[in-house]
Amino acid sequence: MKRSVLTRYRVMAYVTGVLLVLLCLSMIAKYGLDIDGAADFTRVVAIAHGWLYVIYLIFAFDLGSKAKMPVGRQLWVLLAGTIPTAAFFVERKISRELEAKVDGPAPAAAKA
Image (tube, rainbow, N blue to C red; front, side):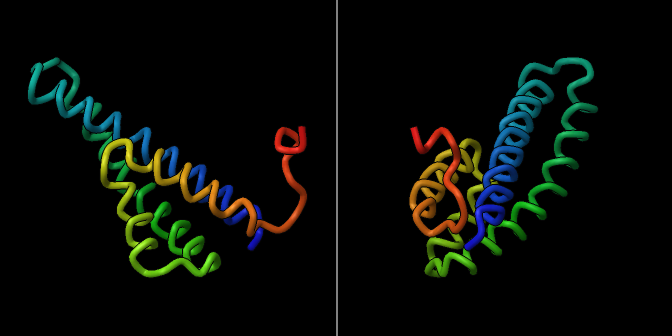
């Protein structure tokens, strides 16, 4: 498995996770606190998260198939983008497990 497969999954996991947390906070601001302008922000973040989640699904599925993950584990990785903060924890766990399977040179920080 190439390092780029893991890297693009990691980037999309963080992007999806951050957008989902922002979406949750904006929903609280919109419905719970009735803040002006929160509706527009919520709409923008919801659309961005929706489209980027689709890209996350593609990259996560690609990672799962190339890493030969069991179906249950792959489903957990795919669903992590729908649970606030889960993407961060799942990404970290998967990345640690797959570092050994990655071809190519190790990052400079890992050599030290």
